[in-house]
Length: 203
Image (cartoon, rainbow, N blue to C red; front, side, top):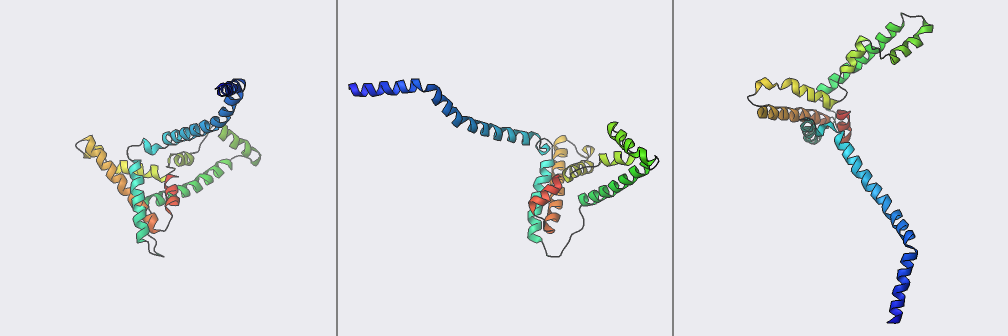
């Protein structure tokens, strides 16, 4: 009995004596895990908040249609068959042509000045955020297929054509799913991997 009590006293005195070290060691064990969990939660919240499909009324329908269309396109893919260009492809090519015109416009503008002044004129344009007409037009163009199709849906489905907001919203969602499916089906037929095709749509 005395030896048991003696052992307990020794154990208690050990914990009292090394209490700070034991707390420090448990902290070293727990802190990295707490930081890792906090980082995962923080990253999840950041990605959710910065993903505008979570807040846009029908972009998620474009994506779900795209996924279904791509899966069906992959099943129907025929080697060597190339379907016609999508609306986004045509828009993207037009944007590329406009970029070439923007470069020419800038060249023409700078050619008005002596060669020795062109560098400083470019610097002024940067500092004062001066943009030539075609550059302004280029800036207004959509940067991603998702934004392009969302606007396309809005243009096609007008509120005045429907008796209620609910009907209008349903029509927007249906049209969004349809354009997503059409684009996804074409990408699947072309043999593009889903992740690559999705990345090209989202920019």
